[in-house]
Image (tube, rainbow, N blue to C red):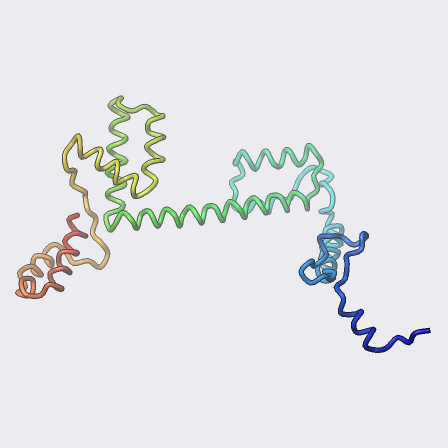
Length: 225
């Protein structure tokens, strides 16, 4: 009969584990070849909590807790549809919370991403971004009022006018018919006033110092376009 040594036991302990068929796959750490004991414990605790609060089933009176919708307006059609659907099919409160929480979170992330994109496009338009946007929107609205464009045309305009390059292209199109259209500039916070700009031009450095002259010209461009 062979003798089992300590070294043999250590070698066997080093061998990777295989998930038994009866162990849930979602609670198995494949990268570590080990069971996720912490994960299954938390899942069990969450389940016990849901059961104690009655969230494991649909509310008996059909009145769901709608706090998962957050700041979604009560008259939002999607919100009304989800609540009606949940009541119709007897969806549990926990399942509704999970579904709504995921959707609300995704919508928030999408809104944040859209805001970042809008800020980037506005920055690309330069210091007179608001004036350029307002100008091109008024022009497009005028085409609709004159009957040149219909509602479908205006909707396409919104798509094209949603980027800095699109607005620049529309400005060129407008200029080809109307000539150069001056932009109603808006003062930049902290920028010199018009009187101060004229005083800066009168400064001898404007003719002798290239750096100073460039600074003045940039200030003029911010104020006058």
